[in-house]
Amino acid sequence: MNEFFRKFAHKIADAIGSPLAFGAAAVIIVAWAVTGPLFNFSDTWQLVINTGTTIVTFLIVFLIQNTQNRDSKAVHLKLDELVRAIAGARNELVDVEAMPDEELERLREEFHNLGQEFHKKKDHIASELNRRQRSGRNG
Image (cartoon, rainbow, N blue to C red):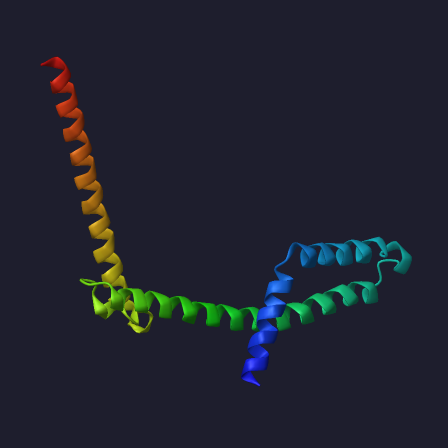
């Protein structure tokens, strides 16, 4: 049952994310709007589109969530394998998504600081190269 639902959800998610599905939805909305005068813009006429879109949205949310969860797990496994395989990488980052929010924030800050240090070094090296180039032309 799980395998059937996985395949079904994946195929439906791919299909509803296609330009053809968007076009079909747009055609349905236009057809509904065009029939408004035919039904005197009645409550029933409005109820048809409201009910239809609500049901479709409700079901599709579950399908998309299923495919998102699966894709997210797959990406995490791939990243975990890369972290595990690279010498010098911190293995504490494997399974980082299971860490408490406070620990994630600490790691985010750490990486933010590393990025700031990198940019400072990069800027310093670039200005030093420019200075050397200018002094080489003048000398």
